Length: 366
Image 1 (cartoon, rainbow, N blue to C red):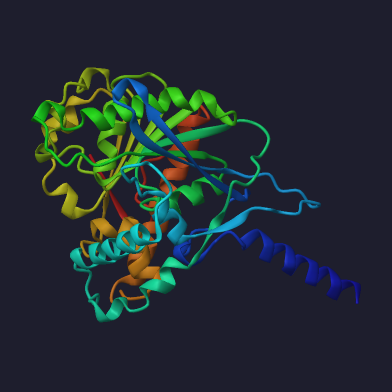
Image 2 (cartoon, rainbow, N blue to C red; image 1 turned 90 degrees about the vertical axis):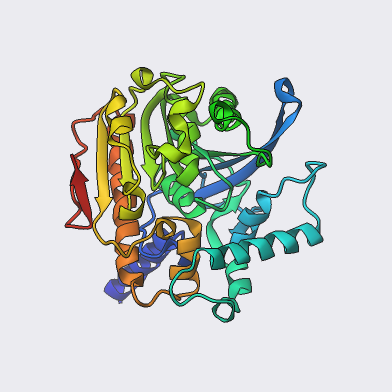
């Protein structure tokens, strides 16, 4: 009887530890921390009261006697957190409906195999999917290494939740899109200044360790983080997940903030074959830092397999039966590498990280 009771306790304990891993996480394994999430609305008075939504994922405090008054986040909570209207107020029901419709239409634009209007009839179920974080949960005690991002709340929500469960604070900055294209030298000016502002703002978040700070980005979100690394020495590591930072069409080198000599932040560069195709070796060799280049070996794995859109199609709706398993392997392997890289440089032991191929999932680029 005692053995049976002990076994039951162990099973329940294991279940509790695995609880944070929700459907969109796929095969990602949760770390030791429960996760909290909050949004902070601010304006930059020096830039005509530019509205900013700051999203924070963090290790949350868990007490056995705690009667939680917090609420579990659903995917739509993340989606609606990114709505910035003219009044910078809470979105109306009409705005939420419009935003969700536009998000669904964007999935169709990426032309995943097997995805069409009919296959997205269960999209509403995705909106209601529970996520791992709890809204406005109490923060864990202590100070934690931190990762800065330029991103909408939903885009890297799975990655952010997972990193928070591993003991990181993830802070994402979301601002209005510029509908008017500025000159080449200023294309990334506003987004980079947002990241500079965010770096300073983190001093107001008590659980952030100012001496252990990194940045990361997906797609275009890597470029403000990349340029930030040329403007500050605070960043100990930089992660590019499928971003076109070295592609000439991005006009990065034309930016007024670009200074390759000052880019000394160690960088993990994870890209698919589609992204690599247009990269400039000249731009890559220009930066003055440790650069770890990893190429996804499977050419069927696309850019969006690493974004929230891939998560929804692959995991939420199970629509990519042809390569879903291989896409999941690549997604999990990329996150394992990110974690090793961040731990190595933020814990001041860069001898730990090895630029490895992860059993053939990635190819090491020289």
